[in-house]
Image 1 (cartoon, rainbow, N blue to C red):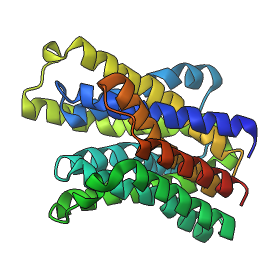
Image 2: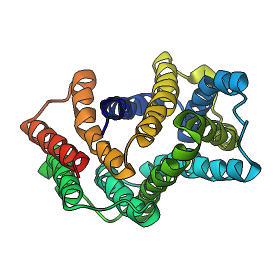
Image 3: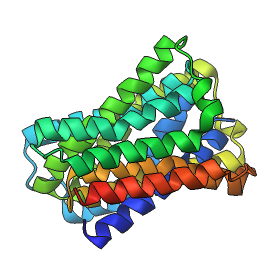
Image 4: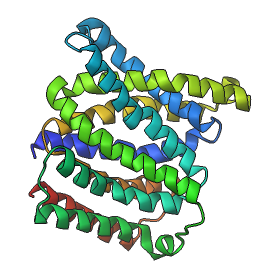
Length: 291
């Protein structure tokens, strides 16, 4: 994997790790679907200058635009919506465990759709990374897992499968149209579909922007600019330079990074589990890269 792709993925993983803390802050005073709509609108605005100055639709047929619209549903609006809704009905423990299946989903889908080979090194690397994430979570988190939240669990699992589809089919489109164009249109179309949902929830809950705290406003701006705009763009740039299987395994770096961010920002303790788990994750990612 080129060094630029590795740097892009590590940066994206770090920003997504911080996003969990930012989301907690935002959800204190803003309804979930409104948060999703606002972050997508902010990220779409970041892309608009490029679209206007370069004629972003040039060379994109109506059929291709339809494909981009479907990709935006899978990777932005529906992905964020099902994940956020699922977290309201299930536990954080369940959700964090299910996210470990994301790169595995990408590994299998890329083999079926793109014809990427699943080598022994890739398989062992993914298993090492999974083990690292489980070590970071610790025995208390693992033993508190419960199957009683079927509705929420199903929604979270659906969002994970959507991200796998988003990565695999996004890889194919990136190879044809380029990372910037794909990311821009996926984000803009996703924002257009989420705005009505956000407005409906705001009216149904009586939400008012007057009640949004400064911290929540900053958190939403961070989610839109740093995460939905910059991190997603970096992810697609890396997809354009490497196999989707090797890109997907970098998602395992997010839980250890999240733990570090939570320790620095929320005062949580950095444990030996975090150190050992991070070593396993790094080893798994490195092995998968060389597969």
